[in-house]
Image (cartoon, rainbow, N blue to C red; front, side, top):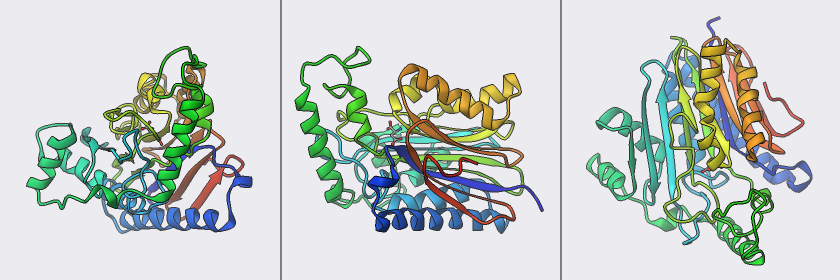
Length: 328
Ligand code: ASP
C-alpha cells in the first residue's frame, strides 16, 4: 500500500476532560471525524493533498465549534476578523488572506490567492474585492458570530479591566492589560488546520482562524503567515500550527520544523518537539500537526490539550482531544 495520510487540528489550549460535557466531547469528536474522513477519502481515491486539505478545513470552518469561519472568536470591536493560508509542497506556491469580515471559507480564498493572483498574501477589503471579482458571495458579519463567542469576549474584557495598568508577566504590553498567561489560559484557541500527503508523494498544509479573542482590530497572527503558522515542502514536511500566534511568528515555527529536518536531518517528531520547546522557552504555548514525505506524523502540543485527528493509509481514523490521548 502506498504511503499517504492526513492530519488535522481544531486548535490547542486549555482543553480539559473535567471541564468538558459528554455532549460537547462527542460533538467535537464527531466533527473532527467528519473532517478527517472527507480529506482522507479524497487522497484514498487518488486525489491531491491540496484538495484534501481544502475540503477538511472547509468542514471545520463551517462548524460553529471551531475558531474559524462560522463561530470564530470576536475581536475587541466585537466582530470576527478571519485569517487563513495554504501551501503546496510540490511547487512551494502559497496563498494567504488576513483580516476578512465577509468570506465564508477563508481557506478557499487563500487558495484562490495562490492559484489566481500574482500575490501570496492579500488583506482586508482588497482581498474581499478580489473575492467578489471571482464571484464569491459576501456574507453579513452576523453569519460568523455566535452567542458563545460573545460571552467569551465579555469575559475577556472583564479580565482585561481587572488588571488594567498591571505589568504583564512577560514584561511587555500586549493586547491584554492583565497578565497574559492568566488571560490566555481562559481560552481554547480552536484554530483549524490540516496537513496531507497524497499517493503521488505531494504534501500540502493549510490553516484557518479567527485569531485570538479580544485581539485589537487589525491584529494578524501566525496562521496566515507562511513559515509561521503554515508550511509545506515535499522535501521535508507539511505543518500547521495553533497557539499563541505572536510567539509562533517570532519562532517561525512551521518553517523551523522543516528546516530542522532539512539542515539537521531530524525526523518530523523530533523536529516538531524541538520547535515547540523553543516556543515554550520564549513563554508561548500551543501545538502543531505535521506529516513528512514518508507519512510519519506528529501531533505535538505544550498546552493541556489539542483537538486533533489523523488517518493514515490502511488505518482507521484516530481522534483525540486531551493531553493523555495519542500524539502520533
Ligand atoms: N494561532 C492563532 C493566532 O494567534 C490562534 C489559534 O491558534 O487559535 O491567531
